[in-house]
Length: 357
Image 1 (tube, rainbow, N blue to C red):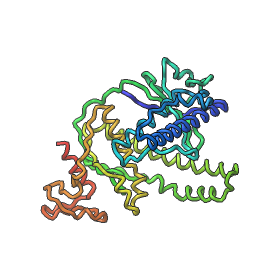
Image 2: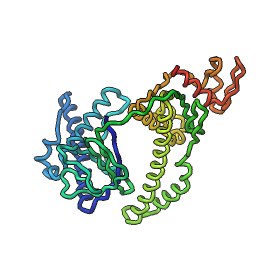
Image 3: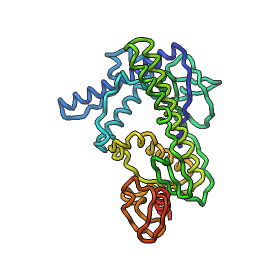
């Protein structure tokens, strides 16, 4: 089974220059191949199967970087095309902008070209190993690694490892999860995870830093310093959110054998401009992704409720359906049939739990 481990790395000046070349060449090859495919299709009506190798004679500086990184750029473009033709809502492949402050490239481990040793990691095409902060060890065969540079200027490496993951002992516990905005998640066992609202808590500080950035002269070193301060705060908020999601998803997976969650169409919910910011902040989609892959890792069952399942409209006691909860202001569900009064989110989680029966 494949598992990724992310670490902070500390490249020296020469290694930073090499990474910058790789980032630029990967972006160039991706954009050039996409441009040639579009042009070829417009002229002939047929698809073009181009490769990075055919550009190296014209652009000799492409030979200075890792060839596997260029090959992975081709694979990413092919994947983008497949995703588009499978589902048009994914959108046609887009060109990569030079102005984007998130940079990355992926390379593969071929016959031991990538390895970690004594606090350093060896990478293809680099003469000297890169210092790595390996805060946790891993066992298994390294398949590939992705080197990235964040807008804050920090470098990270994500190492994909083929390893054996030990299944958790079987449990008799089952749980239904109703996600929300006021409470991030309400569980059918009575637990409720409060929404930590990391972005809201940092909004004033973020607004001040963004005002300071807007007042700096474009192109000046002071503007770059202000940009990094904004980027670091955004990174902190993202890290806090990911930490919260990882902890809660792992806790749920460890305790329960079967987990039921709603099939929420977040893209449609985001069309409500009054709630879009709050919905984006809670990251329901990312939470579901974590539950999905962790349940496969540890031998648990994740059940996705049907899209038309009215979990919040059904009475968890008698099964009567009432449309009162279509009004989001209604926080208490009162069953007109049996008279049950219950918190709407807890009621929904109990209805979701029934899907495990």
